[in-house]
Length: 211
Image (cartoon, rainbow, N blue to C red; front, top):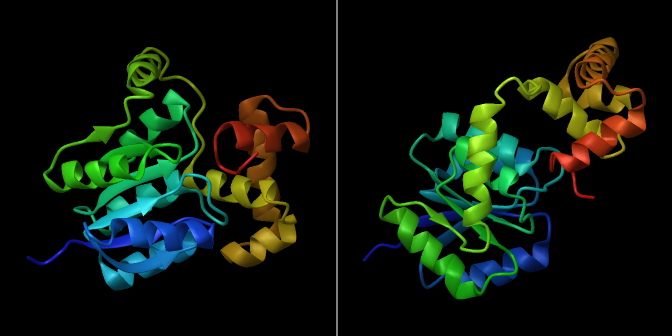
């Protein structure tokens, strides 16, 4: 029987190597990626049926990459493998199109179980956070007015939070430096933040970058 084609994404190479060994009995690992941008490129080329990805990745975080992946490959199954126990983050993952959510502290057998479940068309959430997720979904419904950044704003914020200058961000995104500055100060105004440090702290809380 032909195994499903899987793509793995994490910024730790040693973890990717371990995951490949762990998952090969369940899937055919056709590729790996170390950041969100390369993940999008590789996924477009390989068209896997399942992608196991982290949330905190350089250049583009896993949540924003997930949104784009579901537009690019609507049928792909996304399983987030992450350190984040935050139920709000897990709820957001499912909102962008995830089929599974597993913690890195889980046993390898749980990730394999998650893969089997999502390939059958079901969803899988680690039991360690399911209770909190219910509350997270309720909060999102009750407070829809919460400030939400655009995809471009999140993209710029992540790159700035990773320590890149506005000029570097502009070059990477092929936009003018003044456009980066406009988005930066617009975000600060939207979020009612006074300093760049507060903006970076917001990026960390939103899991756009690792703490």
